[in-house]
Image (cartoon, rainbow, N blue to C red; front, side, top):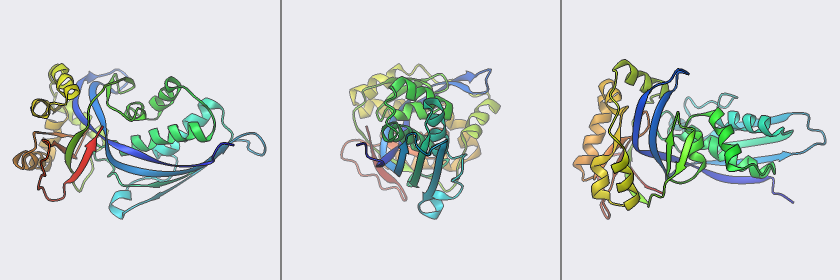
Length: 287
């Protein structure tokens, strides 16, 4: 008999590069990015079952818990990506049943760390098991793409090269790295970050092949200076605190530093054995 309860982690991510190629006719942006999951993670407890019997539709509930500064602004209704993922999967698979989710937030929201997308990806994987669907990776990616641009990449639980608007993904074998991440006391939406790039007519970054080669090789000294994010400069113009956080990490010995996603979190890549003394920084491992 299948279990009807699961407890899973939803891991945040950092970008080793984020290259914006331009705005698409559908309003999204064409991009290339290399994402790796990190050890900072939300925790989800799911109780779910699918079947015939008395179920005529999907019954869903979501409770969000965590420190107040982490849950401020995090919805617990159908707009939460967890709810959207459950609804999308139920519709795609014709599920009748229920799913009750307790989400413990540990990843700051609107921070560029992909917390909401990671929650959605973890929900899809867990409900695929709890509901006994047995959907393929390709089928889950299709549902994930309808939920959010970063959700397909975060299904993999490993390094991923994402293209298109994020839905075209390729696994990349990237060894573990140590990072020091600095979060800031404000959020930036994805729409804001990309909108500022449009407004500033931001340039497109260089060919990312050197980043990919250094990342695969595990060469911290080569990789650090190559990290780049096309959204970083437009964000720094509006929020100089991001640039200041980057300078603090580099000044403390990080091999390189990069804004995560649309910001404002900054991640510093650490040489082996280095302890970075930056107030408020969190040490995490990727891979």
